[in-house]
Length: 318
Image 1 (cartoon, one colour):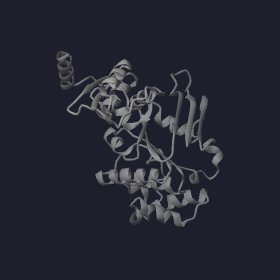
Image 2 (cartoon, rainbow, N blue to C red):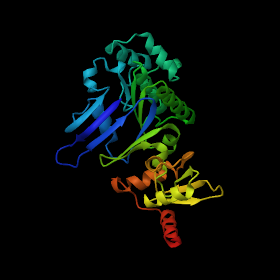
Image 3 (cartoon, one colour):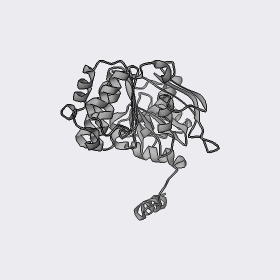
Image 4 (cartoon, rainbow, N blue to C red):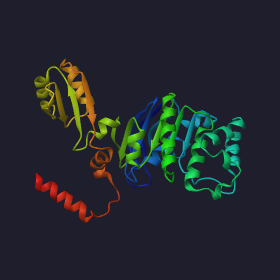
């Protein structure tokens, strides 16, 4: 388990790159790590791995700092930058050096090369690899020690569609084995297919730490279906909590907006209302992400003509 508590990193007098960040990344699920450019995602990963020293707070893996783990690849596998390799080495030599420095058996190198689909490229120099091949090599390095914790920073950049699907299935398989899997990515469509849980940050601060479905349901078009034998009573409770509930064709089914599934379940439990179903229908991860991180985006281009037209149309419809 990864535990981050009040983690802070400040460079000189500038605003902190990471600002009192607190979250927990649990095993058995893929956790997506999201945020706009400059949000502090890579800095957080570097702090976790002991590559940077925090200004304050702590970041531990299995209850201790990564630097205290000894042969690190047996405990944590990480891919931060697929281009940060010696271009003159072969893929096999690169991984063999990592294996030797971490006390791992040499036979493991062939195994992970085969796992990532680079078995036939073992003897090729990395300088001739495409970005996608270097990404696969970086994933192989992360898997080398068969660790219980895996960190990936933008791991599917440069991968073709087959490679993206392979990486998605690999991450879910690793999580299914009970490992802790943290994946940082800008690809919202891919995160929606890969992640079970999200940690979202902006300007170094935590914005959300919740299941993906709940986060996506925060978008303006997100809804939740609730089935209960007491729809009128529960609709009033939901309205009192700041939500909105309407009855559809099924008299026992409510369509709820303005609340997360966690809040809906909490209200049902607190007020002893029997519910048979609570299902989120997100307005889309990308839409929710754009809405909730709008104030923390460092770099923003002017809106396009189409975007302005759509915004004006929405305003007029109100």
